[in-house]
Image 1 (cartoon, each protein chain N blue to C red):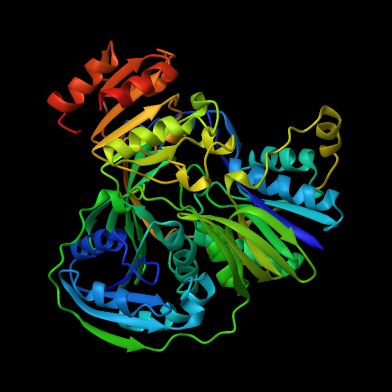
Image 2 (cartoon, each protein chain N blue to C red; image 1 turned 45 degrees about the vertical axis):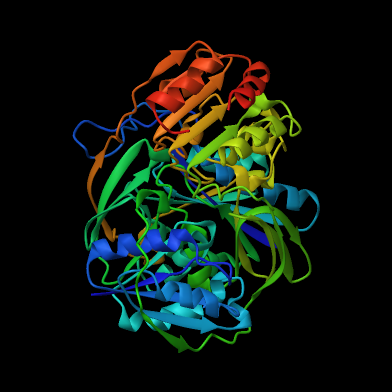
Length: 308
Length: 249
């Protein structure tokens, strides 16, 4: 069995989500190769070659792959699948964007966001916002799978795979990249952080998030938010934790002014320790919190900052 | 221009799904069902495009049981023009949904398909991307802004690092994210009017599409339960517990 893992990267750094996807692939058994598709992404290919247990790194480099747009990824990956039994990508917005397109082109039903590998053809995945765990067995010849990174350990480094250059598709394609507006932050990435502190509607305004940010900086934490806080425009969309936002599973998750809707819980309930700060003692968030503090956040947050 | 808007009838957004004790699935008997929230956003976006004069016709399509007619009626009340229900009691996987939608596109020849990025029941996030592959159309997924121009569309997408803007040639498939718009509530006169709008009743066989499942469901189980912990009285207590009991800071 040969498995292809599609690397998540920004043309400079290989994302940790890739290492976790390699772990999921290794659990299926067989040879694991990594595909690095990008533009001037030689550094990423070199990093991928060091991931433990990887056989070969395929490196396709070209301007059409700079942003891994779905149409170009389809043109690149579908022909490669003659040599593979499975293709896996992290369930990031990127992987979720291109992989179903490849599945349909291969006439395969994708298995989305797996959290466990039971056998080479059998997987567990959350449905209904994580309120149910579905075990499915794929009857397709080729398996097309997105992997929830927080559910797997990162593959260790120490590999020395060979890097093989392959042709990038030339295009033209019917979609074109125009621009990007990326949130700049010195804090850890939300899905990889050991500590996450999130604010909800109770924060009242974007300015008040500064209280959360100061605590985050003291703890080396990432900052997240509930959908309500994002919809209200307090913080950008990429802060959203939940069913359709980011899924996090840090050592410590601190929910501030978040009531705990089903959709938010779906994105954080696998955190090791959960703290809830909310003035409403009946808020559902307290039902999943290890430590609850019923308090006005405008008093509690400055005290917390002081105490750290 | 004509737009196709596929919508799905799912468990209501506010209802917590309960796993059946025999592990055969989620109990949907006597549970409130509604239009998938991302589908509502898709309908709203199409209606706004029609109000702006960008498009002239909105065709809503749903695949599901007889009751999915209600879901289509909701879309018609919001401002869609007519509906198509492809009736089946089987579970239809995203790949089969995409194949059926492609057959509808081949008949209807719309300039765009706008649909939700994900249904809140199976959380698959696949149908739009699959439909674009089958049609060989470009895709603009997870849209938070859509600008339709002459023969092309500009889409701002919600991605992990922030926002990305793409330009796609039409026809194209667009999938909606939460911030694209806030769907309207249908007014009573519009609900009445919607009752007179036509819904075409079809079956998967009418399109000659095999909807047999590729994934065999082995079981559906409860997720690991979290127990509620303790309530601490003060911030000092909290910090003490995090340091000395949990050891996480």
